Amino acid sequence: MEARLLEIANARSGDKNDICNIGVLAKSPEHYEIIRKQLTPEKVKEHFKGLIKGEVIRYEWPAIEAINFVCHKALDGGGSRSLRMDTLGKNFSSHLLRIEIDI
Image (cartoon, rainbow, N blue to C red; front, side, top):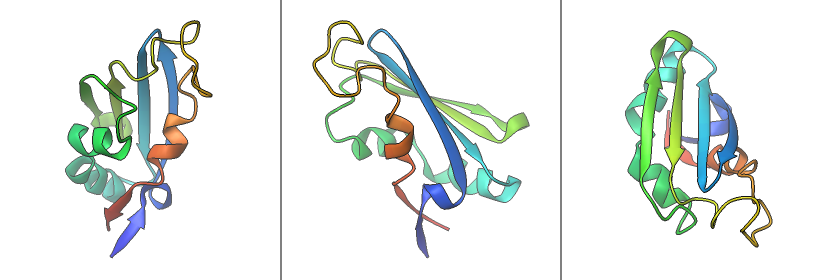
């Protein structure tokens, strides 16, 4: 069965220059395993369809059932240079929570 990530996780995002990080926190240990297996850097980059132009690196934090994605070249130059609506990457987490995964 497919569902949005929102149903099994929470997320938060922010910026450092042209790098956006997205932290995804599972709502349970079982949900963490689903997220860990399915939410790959490639899937995250594809979900943002051209907004992330650099590498996506994934860091796992099993002790807190979380995964952090560091997305390079994701903010069109960063807060002071970008003409995008979300120059600080605050909406990236909300957008990622819309991704469909198998549960």
